[in-house]
Amino acid sequence: MVVTTDFNITLTKHSKLADTSLQNIPFGKFFTDHMLEVDFENGEWQTPQIKPYQPLQLNPSLAVFHYGQAIFEGIKAYKTIDGKVQIFRPYDNFNRFNLSAERMQMPQVPEEIFMQGLGQLINIDKDWIPNLENHALYIRPFMISTDEAVGVRPSDKYKFMIILSPTGPYYANPMRIYVEEKYVRAVPGGIGFAKAAGNYGAVLYPSAQANKMGFDQVLWMDAIEHKYVQECGTMNIFFIIGNTVVTPGLEEGTILEGVTRASALTILSEMGFEIEERSLSIDEVIASYKDGTLKEIFGTGTAATIALIKELTYRDYEMKFDVTSWITAPAIKQKMDAIKNGTAPDTHGWMYSI
Image (cartoon, rainbow, N blue to C red; front, side, top):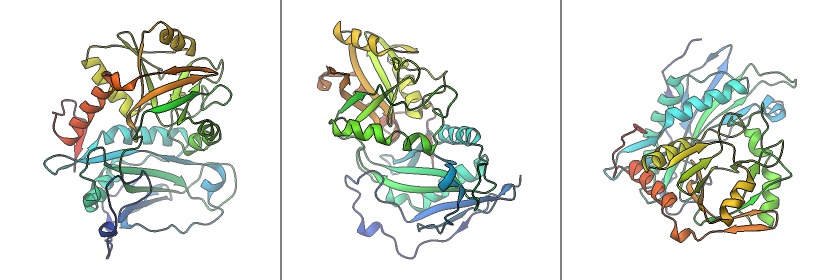
């Protein structure tokens, strides 16, 4: 395969930034001036294009519309206190993107295109990064199949793109979570570990039902026994039981290997907690709540970072928490934020400078 590191760059003549307030900007609603686009054809990647953000012209027979070959990632860039631009752990997302591509029978995106394209695009639109607390530039790389044909098979053509979106806090308030028993997110041998678009489309209906009951998200259970906790709609989940942190393991391939999850595990270990990545039943969660050993529950994700969970409801049993008294989850967020904004040393090499 021939891979080029040349980029064709066309800059916009009129920036939208002057007409856009970045203060408390909602997640995923506004996009920067430019985007990256590159096609995979005849077995090789073509010349990447960085050009003004614009609609795509797509044939209605495009394979992605019919068979769902689509994957994506979520990454964030930040401005440090001294004005530098840094991205949080993008190589982890790059590796996971290609893991998803392999599972969905899609071509690998070369590092030269993914990382260099990311860097060049953000450098062009760096003024869109909000210099505000709990704000960031959300980065959305994605790939779709683009054969213009109807037929169940892997596509021969693909389109890889990166778009950028300034964002404020994703979850401003602690969350109410409903434990889902009927519907499932993923099964062993499925695509639960992949960042595939279909994973998210499939969970919209049960999530909407939970929303109608006043909950923010659902906590998915295993597909076989509906007994063991998995992950929330947009987050991995953590339980602090006594002096031990318990989070579902990755071995079955039914949950996403979150980048923020991995970072939280590192920080928790440094804080002195015993870490257990294992199966955790909802019965064990309830028992630890009843005996007072369940101290904190929180979610981790790129969009949410660290999300406090103030209520977990299983059937008609409500587990409620006073999140204002919590110490650990807020401390993890504070540590991560300090690394991202440059007020704490990046001893793990998590930040990638532009």
